Image: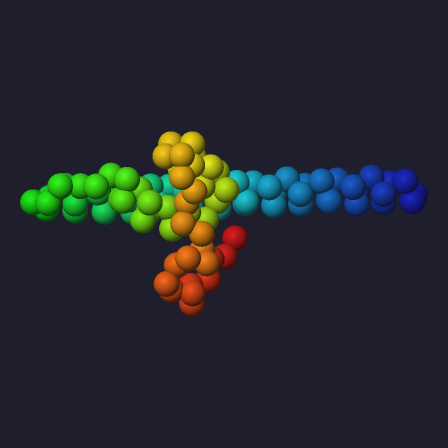
Amino acid sequence: MDGEYDLIANQVINNAQHGIESIQFQDRVTQIMAHMSASMTQLSFKCDSKYPIDIDEFLYINSATYTTEDERLAYQQLTGKSAIAAEQLEDHDEVTLF
């Protein structure tokens, strides 16, 4: 009987782990897509202005919104520079939940 309980307990643990991994994946993808959408909106506004767009500056400022290591790594690979660290931001009251 104990073996049956152990099997059920292991299945519950395994199912819970898979569920948590799925939620974490969905959260990461949602964050990255939200950052992309916000960046595209900002770029759209800049395209509507009469001033030239400094792409390096635009990308650097947007790097402050990155919350995943994948985003920071992609930025560094693209530009050869490090993304803005959270400590460098002026607004330290914002909390990022994962």
